[in-house]
Image (cartoon, rainbow over all chains, first blue to last red; front, side):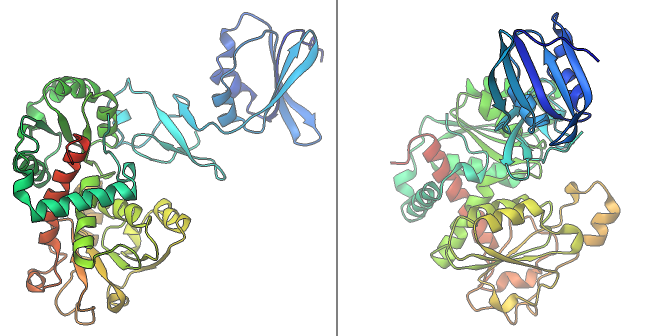
Length: 140
Length: 304
């Protein structure tokens, strides 16, 4: 399978296998005009299998979303066909409208226009809690 | 604009300052009788709670201020679909400080984010009730004189009991506190509250037996199993009478035990216990009013 190498753009590498499409959708990459490639189940020495996303344009990625969904991923910035910067993800301290509170007693259930804000309360265990009701975020 | 939504919004130094002011109010009420002259408190109660509302209102009247009261959510703009954010912005135009109770968790935080005056959380569902915790802390301080090195028994509904969670949070910041967590299996304390205790390097034990640790307790904090926190009536009926404190059960307790309850009680403390000098739950109510006075003075910048 041939995918053209990128001249100026971004490669999101080391995505846990199976999460590529979720990231594509959460980062709204479907709205881009430039070529975007999702490569699934690539053999990886470190991870066994991984997904990769290549974006052939210099865009601003929402690192908070990426850090939350794929903390193991790396972001390579490519300029003039060369790797110019490699960024490692960290868990964001605060998430806005990335995950949603499911506590039926939370104010966000009745006030639909409120942003859903979650704060990182335990980094080691990746625990996020709703800023309003402090309910623990559950994986979708 | 400074608001108090969670007891953790106040540092231990600030809590101690509020206690000092409250104790001064108790000694010299005349000195404070006109401190809030010209100030208005709005009490926005979106769910019924007569006693907390009256406590806030009495507190403001005793400081010489006035009260704008919205006690019935059914007659308010909320029933017309107004958001909490809009209500907070509107009430900020009329009042100098807001006390808010709401059935939805986090509603007072939304109000505080949007109001241009201080907001005090007067209870948001089963979540936070910081002024109850302030009342509890003043009671402990007046009865024991200190917060360090106390064995604190918490009994009843430790799962949904917000007063218990807030009190644990507040006391966990002091040295040498031992918690004895007494509850039926179904109403055990959530693990995140236990983690908070552990994180502070403090000890706790969990038990179903109220009598086992009675001789060791300095404080016994009883709670009501609250019907409104259950989705299922059957579970409520099964658990509501788990613990009933009677004079007989207090036979092995210390002579200076401090028995507390956030009230209202149903039957978890027998009326016969009321005569016991160790019963502090009605003093707690009065202490709540003094702490609300001291807190409002602080938030209005009038404590000096």
